[in-house]
Length: 108
Picture: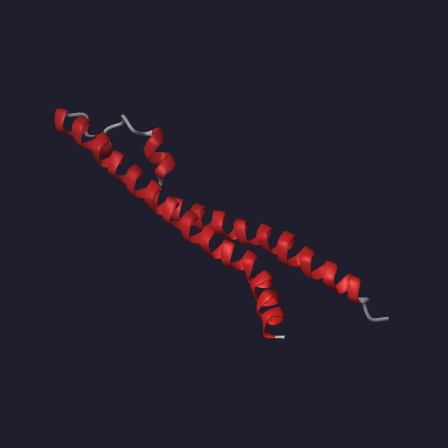
């Protein structure tokens, strides 16, 4: 027996506004985790005061935190950029059905 109109409408809203956003944000957070494997921001924060490459000379103690600080700032900028772009695409995705419905109604 084919689904009723109510079941189709409820299924659409359930899929579009509940299931897809969860999958979308899971993918965005997965992308951030993937980028973190390259940027290693969490590792840079944890090892912030440890000299790079085990260089415990004066220069190594100065350069290490500066280098790590730059990597932390760059990583946070990239994370913020991913979140901003992800939010814009998400808002477009959420508004799309209402926009299509409005355009159909205006064309009548």
